Length: 386
Image (cartoon, rainbow, N blue to C red):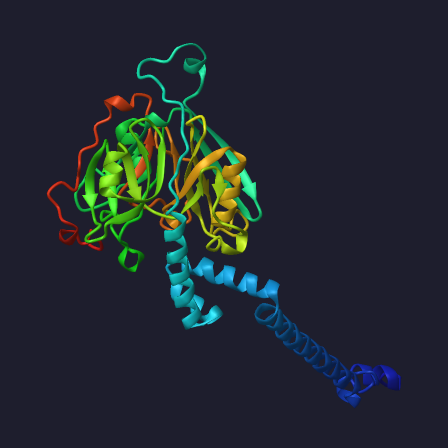
């Protein structure tokens, strides 16, 4: 005779109906769970919608939100995705914003610079001068950005160098190694169709060793330049070619805006600093020392970038009496002896091919820079063909 089995144990070993708390018996625990999840979903959805509405209200309707909105638009304007800015401020406002900056930059280059520097005698240095390092580099930090300040003691050691092959630009690290320079930074801008240019067609003027290497002015009588005269004095602002020659220009490229003149900053606040981006800026102290400020950017977690106002304030703190913007963005690069890259260029493909660079030499008088554009007209150069 088989052993007796209790009702509880037999039911528990069977279909599971012995467990009165099972969800599929009455359905109440399952319904409570679904109800809780639905309530949570509604809470998250409503909270998210309210947050979006509040953020949009702040972004579009408050003074602080508008300041941030236009700074974000300015940041996009400095990139290859300029057209995206219209989704933030509108297409009409985008056109007006760009036109306003062009006009502002022109006006910032009008005031004549009157700063002076000590004129050093040519010849070997002795005593304390000989003991000083020709260059020094220090790190700089600010709100959301990291960068470097290169100081060049003698401004007459700076030369403008250009590529050595027709039809393509050259990396600054290559220029430094090829010429034996002790440091170098990127200089002027260039035609860059579809952001895939070969770096060989400069914009505006290129002057090296007092000679015009490239003239892309066309019918334009004056242009914004950044350069150095034969005595080592920095020149920046709006000049005609004849004026530059009369002033004894030695090395120069076309770029803008000038942000410091006669010891005063020209950008009134950060909101008018043309967005956040990688920056290369050149300046000079009253004692003649050259300052090259390079700010990395477009790299969250490391350095987002700086406004031109940020760059201006850093250079003023370091004694600059004149300063001007050079090509920045993914072109920004600082190189030391042997071609070592100090900063972190923002380009996904690494260092870019460029038409010009300001290089520092121990013996600048021995530097020979051949004119790679000799015999070429701007119309002869295909900026997109490698």
